[in-house]
Image: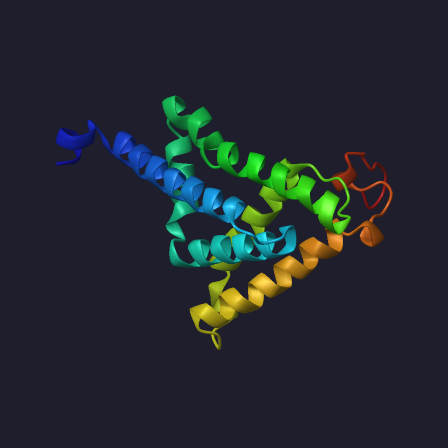
Length: 172
């Protein structure tokens, strides 16, 4: 059936990733069109990312499996970044204007949010006392607090990777 419909397993998995990407893109468009401010948009988005990583932990493995095929490597590397990085760029710009956020590379925000959400899904066993919804709520609150603390002008520190400078030497 896979061969008949998609040609091979890689094409089937690629079609699945494209479908997920289009769903993410539609959700982001709805979020941007909402009357929510940047902080509320960030909170809602992070909650959705965390929830999706917990519900579909195979997503990262799927992407890794597809990356092994040379034909898919570049497409998969950018499949979500091409949608999320421009969203983060607009969100950060609006946050600078409305909330006084400092300048931040949207690619780093993308990697930070995806990395945190991916890790918590892999470390689910660390939170046996929490059902999925409580873990999503708790981790979202924690992650958004970290992000907003890092985005606030008061939280700005010289020589950080987020500002684009490189640190060298011990402890870098």
